[in-house]
Amino acid sequence: MEIISTVIMLIGLASTVSPRLPGHILILAGAVLYLSSTGFNNAPAWLIYTLLCITVTAEGGGRLLRLYLTKNFSLSRSFCVNVTAGNIGGSIAANAILGPLVGLVLWELLVGKTFLPRWSIIGQVLGCLLVVGLLRFFSGLAMIVLTAAFS
Image 1 (cartoon, rainbow, N blue to C red):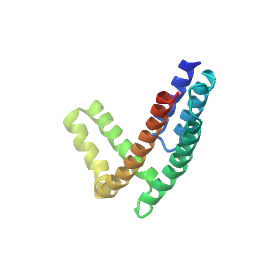
Image 2 (image 1 turned 120 degrees about the horizontal axis):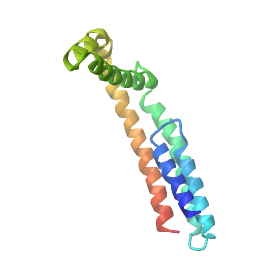
Image 3 (image 1 turned 90 degrees about the horizontal axis):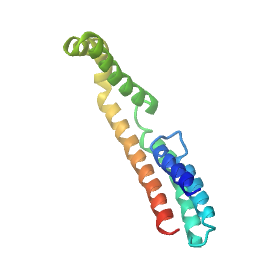
Image 4 (image 1 turned 120 degrees about the vertical axis):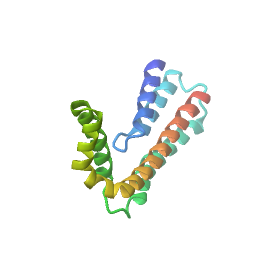
């Protein structure tokens, strides 16, 4: 049971970087499963409450922080992420099909003129999303460390 709960917590930790996946809830479920397999013998009472508070704060606060940090930009969060992934993937595909020099030049001539003028805004939005993702990741890591240290 301990191995299953550890795997659940690690999947939850990987899920914390995605805004759509409830990584902290998975970590909390894994921690409760782990603590219940040991009979809650060594776990202090405050540990579950602390993990629950971190889960509520990280899940709700992460969403609110993401909205707050990106509300004043003229481009949406999903547009910024999608256009960056599409540009990287498209340039790789063009390089693979047409060769490195011709593919890159052709891709930048066709797509770069719409991508590059917005790059400063896209970079700022992606930077804000990166900060929120890192905060969520490290709060999930803290939950796992607390569970391991005090159980």
